[in-house]
Amino acid sequence: MNIFITGGNGQVGFELQRQFAPFGIILAPTRQELDLTNAEAVDAYLAKHQPGLILNAAAYTAVDKAESEPQQARRLNAELPAQLAEYAAKQGIPLVHYSTDYVYPGNGENPWQEDSPTGPLSVYGQTKLEGDEAVFNSGANHLIFRTSWVYAARGNNFMKTMLRLGREREALSIVNDQIGAPTPARLIAQVTALGFALNDLTLTLHISSGIYHLAPRGETSWQGFASEIFNQAREAGETLAITPEGTAGIPTADYPTPAQRPLNSRMALGKLESALGITMPTWQSQLKLTLSEYLDQ
Image (cartoon, rainbow, N blue to C red; front, side):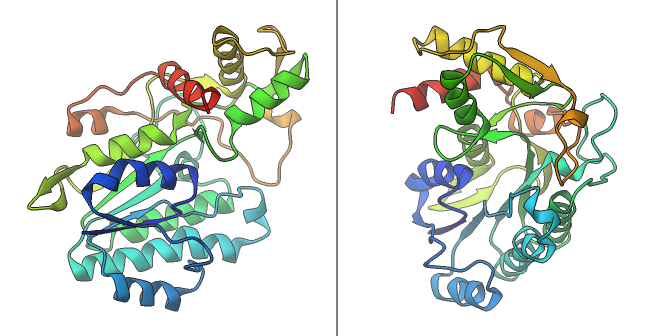
């Protein structure tokens, strides 16, 4: 079976390649091999390779840049998922699509449920929501995983930035009023695989189509995440200039950006845990695994 992974060189896409390699032939074209912004090129690729499963990890993730490039963001975040979902529905194959906490309005302190009212604060969030709705309404067998604060041992992300800055500086000011759960790309890929059953060399969904929240248990701020990165790095033997007390919390208002960020990115995990019969691990334990992989490279 051909498994088509978009965004295969990104953090999530790379982990999906590792996780799904035993189940079929991985098709993860680079940008040079397939221009996802070109709808005709995508149609031609699908017709040529006829995948039996699509994992859509591609996205326009430059949150601030999306404010000035809404059409580019809409193509990757909304139109591409709609195109892939239409193909999946016609061919009777499953599609996995990855979404974000940014589809919610980010107010309050209660965790968002999958059926909570949406209310994106940014172009990025709005275009991702449009993609979710297109997949959900397509008629395809699908899983939509909404996740938050993605990082990994590879690529550019908050964990690696903090480690670099922590080696260079003795003090950092970090936002402390945005609350969520840091989610490793590896965990996203592992949970994705749990959503499938292998029957006659074909992967089929063994949980119901729909939207699921995918994140570790627990919550923290960006400042709390940074402090834990520094604490665990020190325990692992890393030499840092910054001390555990070296992070100062600042409000989002003191760090203005073109795109508005949600303050509340808490997401309820009960639907996913019940469907898969699992208990999600804590974000701290997942950080330890990801940090270890990065430091061992």
